[in-house]
Image 1 (cartoon, rainbow, N blue to C red):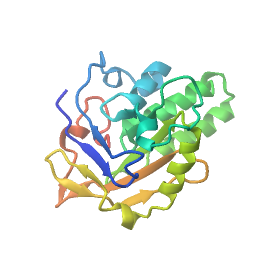
Image 2: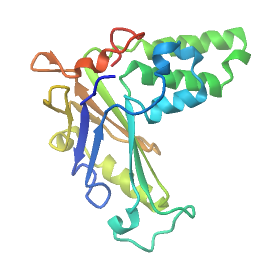
Image 3: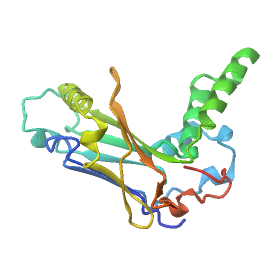
Image 4: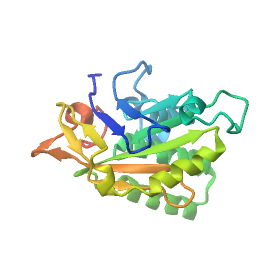
Amino acid sequence: MKMLMNEVSISKMIPPIFLPILLLALVPTILGKDFWKEKSYKEWSEKECSQMLQNSPWARDYTQQSAVTIMGNDDRTLSDSKPPYLKYQVQFRSALPVRQAIIRMAQIDQKYDDLKPEQKQQFDKQAESFLAQDMSKIVIVYITYETNLPTLYLDIANDLKSKTTESVVPEAYLYGSKGDKVLLRQFIAPQGAQRSFQFIFPRQYKGKEILGDFDNVKGAHKRWE
C-alpha cells in the first residue's frame, strides 16, 4: 500500500492543558491482509470492524498518558486503577470502509441474521441510506475522546461547545496528499452528552482532489472518501 500522507492537525482548538497538538498521520501499518479488499463488508468479523474503526488507513488514535501532569490537577479522581490518560480516536467518517464497518458492527450487535424479515428490511433501508450519502465534495473527520479523569469530560465538553466554525478555522486544518494545507469548512461541536466532535473539509483544493491515492483501494467503490 502506498504511503498515505493525509494529516489532520488541531492546535489551540483544545486548550494546551488538554492537548497541545493532535497530529494524525495516516501511514502504512502492519495489519496483515487487507480484509476490506478480500471480502464484502457484510462478511467482516467484529474484530475486523474494530480494526477498521481504530487502526486502519482511515483511523488512528492519540493517547496522552501524562494527563494529570498536563492538567496540573493531581487531586483529580481516577475512574479506574490505570495510569491517567486522555485518548482521542480519529476517523475519516467520509470514507466508505469506515461507514461500512459501522453498519456491519450494527448488524453484529443487533444479531441481524436472527431478525424478522420486516426488521431486516428496515435495517437494510437505513443502512443503504447511510452508505449512499454523497461524500464527493467533503471530507469528514470524526473525533471521539476518552479519559479516566471523570471531571475532565465536562471540562472538554464545555470548551468544545464554546467553539464555533469561525473560531476553529485558524486552528484546525488538513494536509492533502500533495502537502496542501486545507482550511476547515465546518466544525460540529458535541451535542448533549456526546463525547465526539467533527471537522468537515472541502474535498478539493485549488480545483484538485486533495486526497490523491487515498481513494484508490481495490475492491471498493471508485470513491472511498
